[in-house]
Image (cartoon, rainbow, N blue to C red):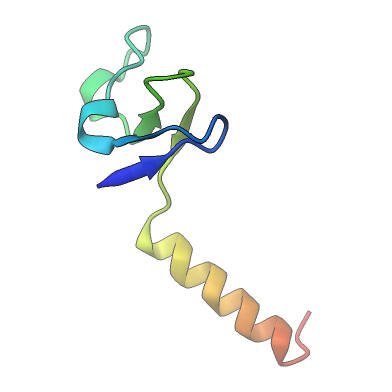
Length: 65
């Protein structure tokens, strides 16, 4: 999968970017994606998070708080 860095906009393959943070004790089991260009890291959204966001947006459009 191709990702775009949220900080610098660099596009790269996520398979090659996982586990680039060598100082992290989690290492290969980490879910973070690290930009090989600027080394900014973030956690990729999961399908559960996407479902929650869609649910809350639907509720807001119906007048729910």
